[in-house]
Length: 409
Ligand SMILES: NC(=O)c1ccc[n+]([C@@H]2O[C@H](COP(=O)([O-])OP(=O)(O)OC[C@H]3O[C@@H](n4cnc5c(N)ncnc54)[C@H](O)[C@@H]3O)[C@@H](O)[C@H]2O)c1
Image (cartoon, rainbow, N blue to C red):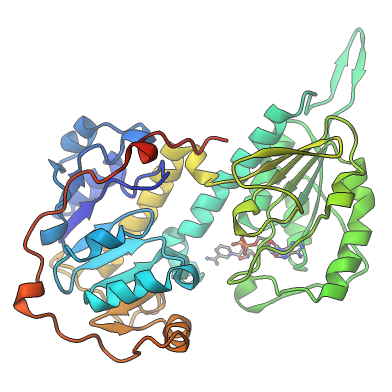
C-alpha cells in the first residue's frame, strides 16, 4: 500500500511515523512518502526517513492509499485525497463534527485512534494508552522540577530530609505511570480512583491506595462512570485532608466522552502549604482542578498549579515512537495478504475505529450528532470527475505562528 506521512500543522510536535516504523513498513513491501520536515519537531531528520526507505518531499496526498497523521488532516487538504483513500489519526469525533462531515463528503475512509476498542487484541494499537503513559511520566517529572524540594528521603550527617508526599488522583494509565515515576524519584505516594480495581493496581506500584467511604463507580469496558454532584461533593470533602498534607498533587481523572470531572476546588488548593505543586493532566479537557489553565502555571493560594497541554507532545520523540508503533500495527491489521490496503470491516477493531467509509458515517454516535445538527445522514453524493483531486498539496502550509509553537509549558 501507499502510505503518506504529513507534516503536522497547529502546535503539534509529534509525528505519526518515525524512521524506525517507516523501515518496518518498507521492509513489509509498502511504499512510504514522508512530507519534507515532517519529523523535524520530534527530532527526526528527513535524511533518517530517506535512509529508512521513504520518499521524502511533497506530501504524496493525491496518490496515497492511507494518510497517517497525529491530528486530523487539515480540512483544506482533505479535498486533495483521492476518493476511497483512508486517513488514520486522532479524531475526537465529538469535537470534530464538521471535519467528519468533510471526510464523508470527500468519500474518505477515516479511522479515529480514540475509537480503537480497548480489547486485549488491540492493545498494541492503543494510542490513548501509549500517549497517556508518556503524559503520566512527564507529569511526575514536571512536578519534581517545579517543586523546590527533594522527592526522596535523604539521611545526611547534617540531618534527615523527609521525602515528598505525592497524591495522585485517577489511577488509569497516566495515573499509574505518574505513581511509578514519583516512586522511582523517591516520593511517598498515595492515590485514589473511583474504580474498585484500581486500588490493587495502585498498591502494586508501591503507593498507598486512598480508600474513601464512597461507592465505587465502574462503567462499561473497565472505564469509570460519571459521578453525581452529591457524590462529587462528598469525594471532594473526603479528599481535602489528603490534599492539604500533600507537597505535590497530580490529577489524571477522565470519563470517556465527558468533560474531565472537577475533583479539586480552588479552596481545596488554598489549603496546601507554601511551595506545593499541582499538576493537572486533564487541564485541556476541562480540568480536574478548578482554576488550572492548559499551558500555564498559575498561583492558587500558596501552590503553583501547572495545567497540561499536549503533554505527550512535550516528549515528542518517545511519544511519536510509541504512536508510530500503534499505527504500524493498525496498518498491518488493515493490509491484505498481498500487502494492499484491504481493511476487513467485519473485524471488531477496524469496524470500531472507522468513522467514515464510502460516503457514510459508520460511527453511530457521530452520525446521530450530525443528524441532530441537520446534516444529511445518508451517503454522500458521488464525486463528479471534475471534483477529483488534480493537484498535489502544497508541501508546507504552515504559518509563521505555527512554526514558533511552544508546547513545552
Ligand atoms: N486494551 C485494554 O484492555 C486497556 C487499555 C487501556 C486501558 N485499559 C483500562 O481502562 C481503564 C481506564 O484507563 P485510562 O487510563 O484510559 O482511563 P481514563 O483516561 O479514561 O481515566 C483516567 C482515570 O480516571 C479515573 N477517574 C474517573 N473519574 C474519577 C474521579 N471522579 N475520581 C478519581 N478518579 C477518577 C478513571 O477510573 C481512570 O482510572 C483502566 O482500567 C485501564 O487499565 C484497558
